[in-house]
Image (tube, rainbow, N blue to C red; front, side):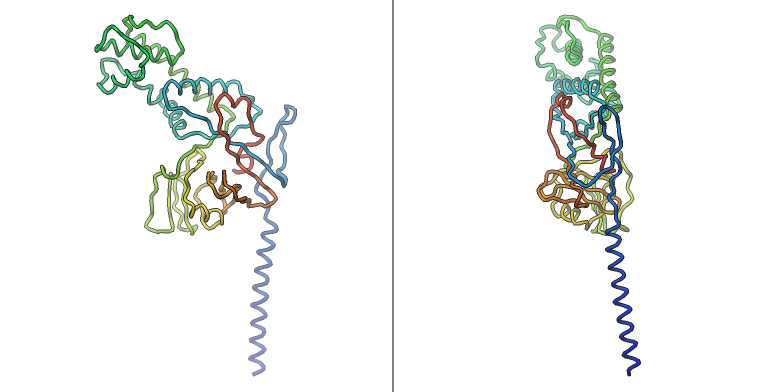
Length: 339
């Protein structure tokens, strides 16, 4: 009997030591975990230098540009944006928040050198259907034509008038008989101008994020209720092994209107993402957290949420007109801290 009791006591002791060692190793792992921040490039007296991120408070500004909807206002925006791209101080750091409309327009211009609205100007006047003719009338509302009404010449003249407006050219004569060749020269000039904007943006030192509402994203549910996908490369799952393998896309995503229940689970590290960096605008949290290799940045909330308590890093959104960028800057990119 004594032998049995001794064996039971020994077994209990070994179990206790095993549990203690496990707890101790977990505590040691937590203590040894180093912040993931690398060195940050800063400019001091015009000289770039690398500096280690030390404990403290950091504010990263992300500027949301006011992007218009009307064609001629967009044209003004493009001209001003290009002016900024050409004149901005290369030593300044800018993280931009782009409306999805602006991002899509830039992609379209990159592909065809004209925006969707501008493509109607390239169509031969004789090939325009009735809807396209009415669209041109609306676009050239300030033009008061008295000749060639109802003919192909009327709509060719309207196309030439709009192109002159977009190119800030004077000398349009509503009584002229403009040709498709006249229009072709203007189209070529406009395409070159648009191509120049896209190329300057590509070569710029601007970091950008694409703003999208969670409500507008194609939301597909898998048969397994624990797995959800939205957009192309974001996956939420309670189990790592359940995550779908989806293609990566290059642009960083900034989401609004995120469901509170999923938001809370992200904040408490109960969900995993198939996504490197995700910026979430919300009313609950401010700060950042990690989940394995994923980074979630909370913007606009009230409750502080910092994965490393000594590193209080906040991304702050500021709205601005495009020309005002020349007067602004931030000391950091978002990517200086979050890769």
